Amino acid sequence: MLFASFGAMVGGLMMFWAAGTKLARGFEVLFAGGQEDYVGAAIMMATDSLLFGVVLVVFAYAIAFGFVFQLSETSRKRLPAWMHIQGVAELKVTLVQVILVYLTVDFATDISEPGDRLSWETLVMPIAILLLSGALVLMSWSQGRRETSDP
Image (cartoon, rainbow, N blue to C red):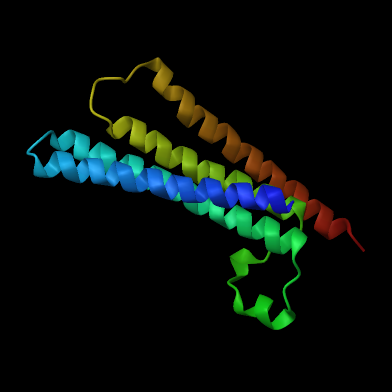
């Protein structure tokens, strides 16, 4: 579990680096008097990378302090509520929520890229987002039923 947490943290740092290079390239194009369309796309791609980096860092924390290390009660109370992981089921729901946000931002990034790439294949991502949203609703209903049936 600690190895998985470390890998997620390294992946998050790599995504932050990738976002920085995309922003730097956007600045380069902007100040060279280049395509303004590319600058907007570069910002969206950097946002996409930053978001995924944050997701990986949060998961690294959740795995490390949810399953490997035990925090003292006072330290745990100082953390925001969203960082309190109770178990694998909660981690799964959080993962699906994060994937939905990531896919939505990724779709917006794809749409904002310069060029005419709109076709029927463009609908694959929103359909996947819709199906995952339905799965999340079903997971939440299932989780609610388990909690009410427990004595």
